[in-house]
Length: 341
Ligand code: PEP
Ligand code: MN
Image (cartoon, rainbow, N blue to C red; front, side):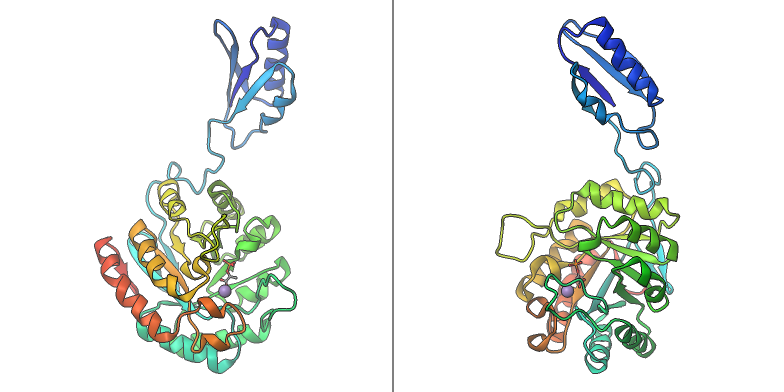
């Protein structure tokens, strides 16, 4: 942490800052310039109290952190890519996996049909929401436990591991007993008690970025899961809210590049929620592969026009087949292995 003092600060006021720094167990080093004094504070900012509150002292002009706040998820901590094992699938480190399935589990027929068809086109994991975080309380909220039972049948029929969202800490144990990967949705991206609870489940966690989440906030949410003893995290960029309304959200491909550089965790992209419209999903998926993502999360529905949620963005099975065909050569160019490794 670097504290810059205002010009003309008296010796007594310099010492007051140095004393305050010591109280937080940092060692203050004074750098005296011609006009102003700078206090360099020695200590690991990640496990010390922040000094940011010293900005309230009248002689302090600025307090600037020099370390990143995340540690366990960083490349500095672990240089090599994390490779996760999900029911025998290797995720990260040179593989590319596509998670596909409906936004919501609506009934058995719709779910089973989708699971079988996405598998036939090369998806290696199946998604479907049983607990739906809908913007409006009047919209379909998901089938809950009945939906999880249907997902279990889909897994039994296809062998595809299941990715499904959990929305509240008290449901974690139950959802974890059905799911292979627990999804934390964008609306819960900074729900600390939920992050702690999913970490404790020991499952692989697919962590979406918050709707208005900074990259740092996303990585720190992953850090929360790691700090609670579970480093099996997949980051998932799903578009952020910007001033642009042509698509539902703006897919932030920079965030994927940054996350790949900063962390060792696998990074997936969800082009469906980013686009919010089916006709943009394939181009965004191609771009996601090219920017270096390790996988995709794509919504597919046998008949999107009748979907109970996110109908406008779900691909028909044939369109999903086209997506798989179009990403295949790009995955190869990126030096990754598509599907079951
Ligand atoms: C979903 O995956 O269906 C979902 C609700 O996603 P998000 O949390 O990204 O909106
Ligand atoms: Mn959805």
